[in-house]
Length: 334
Ligand SMILES: CC(C)(COP(=O)(O)OP(=O)(O)OC[C@H]1O[C@@H](n2cnc3c(N)ncnc32)[C@H](O)[C@@H]1OP(=O)(O)O)[C@@H](O)C(=O)NCCC(=O)NCCS
Image (cartoon, rainbow, N blue to C red; front, top):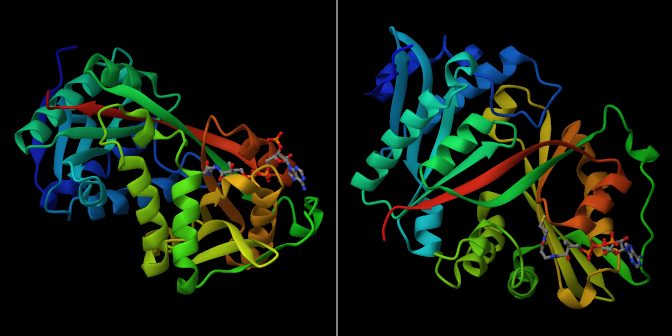
């Protein structure tokens, strides 16, 4: 087989990918195993069409004998750029046909072209998230100089299999209660975020080239933006009137609802370090499941692979690991 030809396409031509998507092995939403293939591919095409409306995006297509065998979509990460103050971009989509990508040829060529483009745009750091079983892509990124930063494990709780009344309620520490948060709670939440994530392990902490406060700034901004529209609810845990933890919850996005994905997102939790190990996370999770269970049958939650107490509580409450993704970073500037 001769090598793939890599070409850049305009947003107006993006429809050419539609017939190729069914041939790609690693698709988005792999953590939602109940979805039908056609549902995933229709969602993916809409997600791609949305991604290319971003003025900073660029789409590269790999072809062999006029057949599309892979593609990559790059775009700037405005949130990271604003919060961290460095020029950060992402490979938002990267896929290749299994039969043409077993030797990593196609995906390697796509990565090289995307990196070249990002460097020309003045990007300092390029990021990518990859399915944990997609070894061709993992090897192509590593050969190109990307470094593994962290691994996110995706949990799903399926209410259609386990009704809420069959979930065993965790032991409730005396004086512990939960409620919905309000903007008046923000200053206490920011203090908890700062303390809880100080010694956290995540891709912002793991990357030695990130500015020293990057991780802290990201988690503070995450809490702040959750009260200004990014999330739908914040739940608060209190011990005798003092806020000791919070959890962030989000309804399905407009695109997820359009494709009837039937999901609800459990995004992030932080517990004040003085109150860890007292069942606060367990109760925040259990009470949130009770409060929001009418919104969808499938609750999803990402967590870092290193969070053993999160894993234990999730298993006890009946959540299951359905997928995992690795985060890679490559710094393009010396
Ligand atoms: C990770 C984190 C959320 C865990 O929160 P937590 O409130 O300490 O979790 P819990 O107390 O519910 O569970 C922790 C341990 O306490 C035990 N526990 C639960 N209920 C208990 C109770 N009533 N009394 C005593 N111990 C209890 C659990 O069995 C668990 O034990 P294990 O670690 O041996 O499995 C918290 O440490 C944190 O905020 N970390 C920093 C931020 C972060 O990493 N967030 C997660 C992002 S997904």
